[in-house]
Image (cartoon, rainbow, N blue to C red; front, side):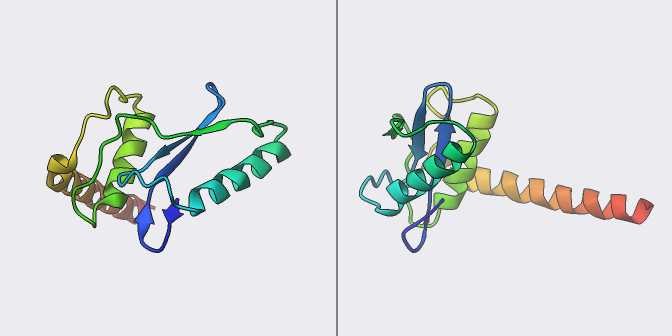
Length: 123
């Protein structure tokens, strides 16, 4: 989710625990946007016949924190990657890993681009 004017964080619907989880690399619980996003998700889920009215909002800890002001999107992507892989034991990354993470993401996108180009040429 886009929080404030220039920050990204991850809002997760945890159906099993009946909670909303916010992974925020700045751990700023004072953002007014976050409860608004949660309310929007509650309305959406109600339309899907899921009663999330009493679900709590949780900020999992530990949650890796950024050290510089321009890594929030990369942290958000790493949170998603770790959660998708179920590699959440302490979320195994930190600000120190960001140059390597950026390089790996860049390489992944370049490979995906060229693979897509090759597939379109075969058609």
